[in-house]
Image (cartoon, rainbow, N blue to C red; front, side):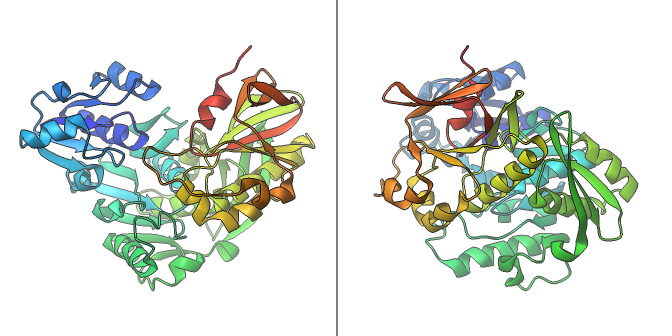
Length: 436
């Protein structure tokens, strides 16, 4: 089948494109501009057009488009004029995943990490909304089992056809999609979980508790996870813990949340492997890009990139920083926050006010927004005055240092301590582009 993807450079859509190509389909795609992901797709033999234009639509049988694509997109318009079958990413999932043995992971937080851990344990096909350091991509093609990161943001997870449904937590997020109808939101989660022949849930999550799920493998972290310890190996973080009566497990990463995510992956993997094989395969997991991603390790300075963009995620990241600092003794903890979207920042403002406790200094960058988003009035200076934050325009990473810049002037340079950038916008590129 000939399939064209509009917005193929996105982290989610690119994984689907790779999967379909490896499944034997003829795949092409387009994006507004060239990126490292589109370059990788080209190297893998996928025809990628940039910029987007009606002329890029050759003779596909199906056109799949990302959630960011609007009705004004020239390729989408051309496809509809020519009566080519067009599907959103959400609508395409039944075609992509079909009747495969899908292990689908959902949750407001931790789903990328849990999916990546599970993929490493099962050594299977992986379709993830992040880059696994185990195999250096958001996609890997292996055997018949699929580890899939299922997305609740547009309710597309109910179309993912799970053999095993795994849920880390069900904290309300992306409520604008659900029109702030909480009953609809939780009913959708319940439907997703019950689609699975096998079910694995964090039974202590306050929101999952309310769903009344039956016949699931339940994790009670406060009881089932014991004797947690944290160690550094070559300055890399590892968490060791005991799970139920299964013995000890050691996994890359720091924090209680890492132990919880790993435990869910282990309990799901028991459907396929014995516990000793799981324990061995878990060593293949090396973390995922942008999740406590240690970019620089110097004598007195460590630079970390983290995708955390919700208060709960930022709190977990800061706890991981504290654990890391307790072992490294770098003494200063600096958070650089790039708020992500007006709607998310506004909806979670009370949480953001509290979540930075534990950092010594806070730097706030301008909101990373998306085209067409409604601008909301947020008084950052008043809301976050308790932290005495530095407001900056951008950052400039150097070897063993980082400059904080406003109006093209360096306000401050950090060359000691742990500096962590959090956010889902372009902060990751600012952190990674080292200027000498």
